[in-house]
Length: 490
Image 1 (tube, rainbow, N blue to C red):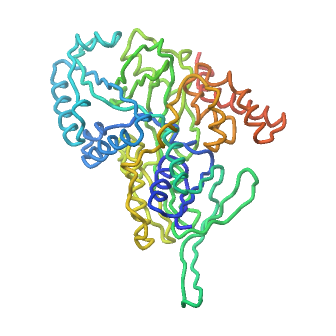
Image 2: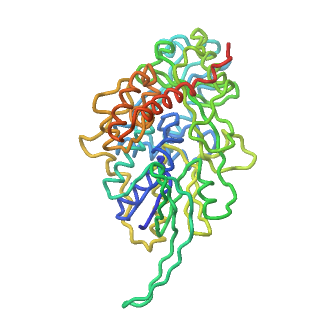
Image 3: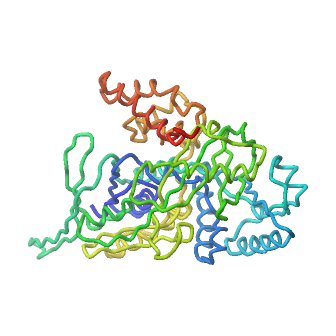
């Protein structure tokens, strides 16, 4: 094998697809389910990069704008255009003028299409579009186009594309060891040598281990990047984790038609994002000590977002009982000493270990394709330039007529079959959380379908009644865990 990718989130998926499309022999292993970490727990927005303009990170603004256009081209079914409204408050209209100038600069640098460029709404026009906003010192708003995506679905479709080009892919297969390979063999053609890495991988279903030899191993483990780096020896930590949470409420309780930018108590930007019959509110940005698939949602996290929401819509009075679901994830950022969570750059960085392991840290959902291209460029160079050119910016992600739609509120009859036969789902949570997103988008968080899903998955996997019951209870417990912060809040 020429390249083994460790990590089945969006970054690893992008690397596997790019490498396979260049004709390389590729394998990918994932410790849990695909997209079960950060890649199913983002704000689900394809950002153009406006916020990075304020931080002075011009290259990231340009890259994010370019990659947003490319994603809209290769996966239009996973890039839903939506208006983003940025209300401006102040004693005078100076803030609105400043924002307008910033928008003009952003659109020039990001090469935003004319149809997506901003407009300015005066106060009266803004209130005509959006009732209930706080009106004190309201000067108007800037309005422009952003895109909503289904992050887990984007990851799955990228992995399926990689598989179509020949990549071998496995979930529930954590890497548990790394060692260098240096061999020299003699034959009729003379002496030949092979160097690379041998990765020990554990099959979580059988509990057996196997070894995979690859010329290059790429560590795209997201929050677990440092842990994988340390499998091959001592490695100083380079990743700084920050946590972001989101709350889900009914659109009836917060009837907005556009994405709205709110200012939080510490002057950060947070979003209210409508989709279907729900609205999600996010996100926080706080340091987090260790990688976890499901980081803890605290009372403080929830109050931070509810306070911002109720300050923006004073009459809404969104309360605990209005929150019908929540999710939290950790961002694997490259550490920067002395920076606050929101100040740490979202730029990615490639790290090369003494044993040859290639690690990728940092980055963001919007720029995943470009990150993958940079990694595979390095891999191709180490392989002697034998790979073809990158084609991922132009080739559609899915074949014509095979696109699976974004998350929806209802479970369709064929959904379970597709999840099991085409998308490697192995548990009830795999189906309901990451294939159909019922835990977030269904009115009952998917609880109405949990027994049906357990029956179908169990029949395919040969589960007994006890195993089915455990799966059902585990899913119910996960849904309850997402709102466990309510306990004692009265």
